[in-house]
Structure formats: structure tokens, C-alpha cells
Amino acid sequence: MKIGIMSLTLMILLSCGLAEAQSDVTYLGEFCVVDNSPLGRPPVPLFKVGILYYGDNHLALNGEWQGGIPEPVYGSAMISGENLVATLNSSLASDTYGISYRVSYLTVNLTPQDGSTMMFFGTITFMTTTYHPTPAQQPAVQLPIYMVPCNP
Image (tube, rainbow, N blue to C red; front, side):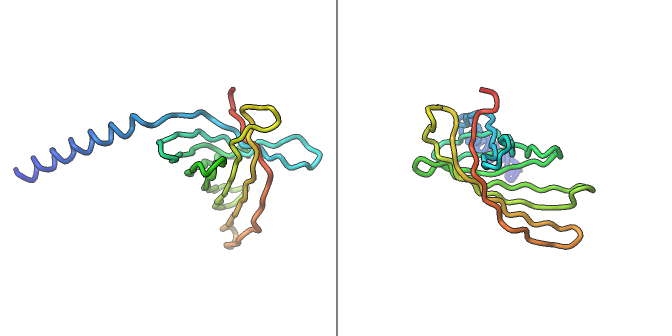
């Protein structure tokens, strides 16, 4: 009986604390990250990501790659000076493309560029490991990117 009452009390205290912490979360919106490589072609959307701000420079990112196959992406970010610095993870398993795991590191300068208040430029580095037919580490790829609100 004592253990049951103590457990119930602990659950109530934890839920009150969690409810208070959750009230500080702010949804900043959905942002599109676009490949800005100057290859004589239009910019290519890489992924869309929703950003939650938890306060004290803690951000959570959840979204999807824009490659046509369902490939969720998730990660975390922080603000460092004038930059958003993030690590993103994703995985893919399909009959066509095999099995892969991708870790991406991106840095985006939050100072508005080119007179725009909502276009931010930076770089992304992909590190991909494929597992089909055999495990193989792909060469790291770095691309110039820009980030904009998906639905301004």
C-alpha cells in the first residue's frame, strides 16, 4: 500500500513538472532546406523540417527528405553566435534504393542576406552508410544551402 501511494505521489509530481516544462515549447514553423549548388540548374529542395524551440538554445527538428520516398529526418540544433548548428539523422529501407543511414551536419547563418529577412545561407555535410548489398561508407558530401519558411 505504501509503495502504491509513493508511486502515485511521484507520478503526480513528475506530471506537474513535465506539464510546466512543456508550456515553454514554441513551434517556430516549417522550414525548407534547399541545395544552392551553382550547377546551372534550379535549386533543389532537400528536406522540410519543423522546428520546436525549448528555450535556452535547445531546438528539436522533425521532418522529411524531399526525394520522393518516405524518409523521416529528425535531429537537434542550437544557436551558436549568429549560426544555427544542427545534426540530423535519417534512414531509408526500400527495394529500389536499398538500406542506408545518413547523418547530416548543417550550419546556417541567421543574419538575413540579400535584403531578405527570411532567407538564410549555410552549408550541409552528408555522411551516408549503405547496407545493401554490403556495408559501405560513402564519401562525405558538402553542399551550399539556404533555408526559408516553407509556407511564408
